[in-house]
Image (cartoon, rainbow, N blue to C red):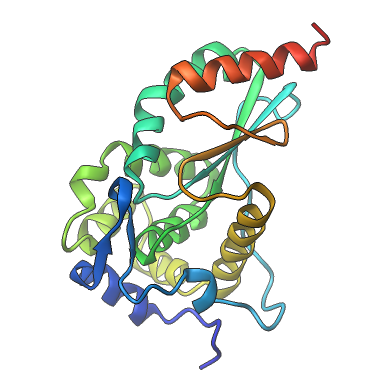
Length: 225
């Protein structure tokens, strides 16, 4: 099997046996072997047509463009989606002043599986699944997360065949890893969530009292004020 191939058994065994993973700082999961996902998945060929589609909340032409580098097993990422994002949407995204694009930065096999499932979903379901996986993180991120992860996707309307296709989509897998490595190099990402606002890495936290003023400052610059 090629080094970059995506064996479904590896993903499912990782999901079913989270005891093989160890907890790192901030409640994130990392591979117990210490190997990064990028090391396990370095592509050596172009592969099939990539199905990855970037999804953005808000007007694509908004003057402020926010990139969110996030992992589904990151507790702080879940806090951003439940606490800060509603305020960001109300003040800037829903008013056409800013948009936000989630860039997947999976920290482990569990986050990778959820990422593959969400990215396989059609656009309306994608946004709903992202909301649910972050909002209900405590419910599914447990010792044996396989069934709750797949159960959420089934409730969203994905069939067993679709889920199997998601978890074996090698081209999508490689594209997620390529974008993760590119983001890590460009923005020096050392943890999640990390944000870039109009192409500049946000030095503060994901909390509203830090992120919202940074968005306001970027908006003022974009409007020439």
